[in-house]
Length: 614
View (cartoon, rainbow, N blue to C red):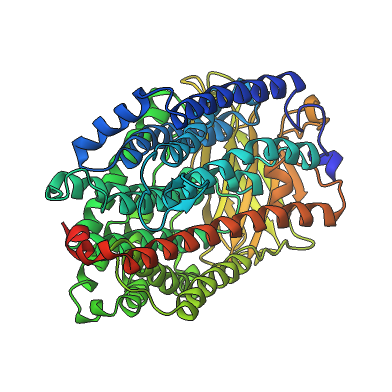
C-alpha cells in the first residue's frame, strides 16, 4: 500500500538538515552567544557603564527599574519578530511543502532571531542588577549577585524554545519530517515563546515596587501597556491553533474550540481580575490588531496562503459581565464560574465568527463532545487565570495544597481532553470511487472536479465535520491557485455520494487528497501525488476514474514522515519532550508563588495594594 500511495520512509531529503547548514547555524549561535556573554561579563565587572545607563534611561520613561525596562523593550521587538516568522513558516509549509534546509526557509531566520533575543531579554534582566537586590523574591546567584525571578524564567523559557531547534533536527533524522505544527519539537518552539508572556508579566510585577520615582503614579499609558501584555499572552496561547487558522488541521476539529477556551480563559480572566474594567476587551482588540497585521503581511504581501484567527470578543464580553458579580471577591471560584460561562455562552458566540470566517465551521453534531472537552478545560483555565491575577495583584494565595492541586488538576484535565481528541478511528474495508472531470486549466496545468461515491454509503452521517478535497503544497505565488492551498468542501447529493463545488489541482507538485472526518472517524486517500525522488516516493496518478481504500490520514498528509522505527523510540522521544514541557509549567507556577509570597512577607508589601492598582 505504501508503494502504491507513495507514502514511504524518509529518504535523503526527508530527514534532518544538511551537515553544512548545521555547522553554520551552530557556529553562528556560539559566536553571537560568546559576544553577548562577554558584554555581560564586562557589565558585571563594571568595565562598561553604557549598558546600565541605557537601561536606566529607558526605565525613567515608564518609571520602572532598568532591569525591567530594557529586557521588556527587547522582548517586545523579538516576540513580534518571532510571531511573524512563525505564521509565515506555517504558511510556507502549507503552500510549498518541506524545506530544503533550515537556511533555505526565510521565515526560519525571523524565528531563530526572535527566540534567540527572547533568551537575551531574559538574560539582560538577570545580569543588569549590580548594587541592588531586585525585589525580595530575587534569586541569589553569587554572594552579591541577585536576579529577578521573572528574568530567570524568561531566559529559561527562551532556552527551552531554542533547544527545540537542534532537537527538531534530531527528530527529523529519526522519524522524517512530520510536516505538522503539532510535532513534539515544534510544540517546544512555539510553547516556549507563548509561555514567555507569563514570565514577562511576573517580571513587570517585580519591578513595580522598585520604581525610580515611588511617588509617581502609573498613568493610563502604563495600564494600556500592561493590557497589551495580556493580549500578547492571548496570542501566545493561541499559537497551538494555527493549523486550524489555515484550514489544514491534521487533527480532529473538536480540538479547536477546546484550545480557544484554554487560551481565552487563562489570558482574559487574569487580565480582567488584574487590571479591572474593560481590560479583557482591550486585550482582545490588541490581539486582533497584531494578528491582523501579521495575516496581511504573510498573505497578500508575501504571497503565501492566507489565514484567519479566533476573534475572542464574545468570550471577552462574557468575562467582563461575569466580573460584575459579587463572587469576584472569591477569585478562584469566580474564575472557575467565568470559565464555565466562557466555555458555553462565550464559545457559542465565537462559533458565529468561526462559521462565517473559517474554512471548517463547527457542525451541530460535534457540540456534545465539544462541550465535554471544553467545559472542564474552561473551568480549569478560569481558575488558573484567577490565580495568576491574584499573583499580579499581590494578594494572598490559597494555601499550598489548594493552589498546587489546582495546577495539577488543570494539567490532568488538559491531558484527558487531549487524549480524547487524539482518539482516531480509521475505517476498515472502506474506500471511495472517484470520477474526475477536467475543468478549465490553471496557468500551471490540469484542474479537475470530482464525483465521489463512498463505500459503504453510511461511512459518514448527515452532519460530518468535513468531506473535502484538499490540494496543498503546490507552490506559492500569483500563478498558483490559492497560493498553494485549495480546499473544496464537497456537496452531498445523497448518502455516500458527493460532488465538487470548485476545481482542484492535479498536476505538478500539488498533493491532492480526499479527506473525511466524522466524529472520531478521520481518514483520507490520495487523489493525486507527484513522484518525489527525494524521499523515494512513487507518484499517484489522477486517473479519470479510480477506486482507492481509505487509510490513516497521517500517512497521506505527512508524506515525508518515516514509520519504520520501533514504537518505543517514538514513545520515548515524545516522553522526553513532555517532561521538558511539564518542567516549564512547574517553573512558571513555582516562580509565581515565590514572587507573591516574598512580597507579602516583605515590609514594602504594605504599599503594594496601592502600587499594583494604579
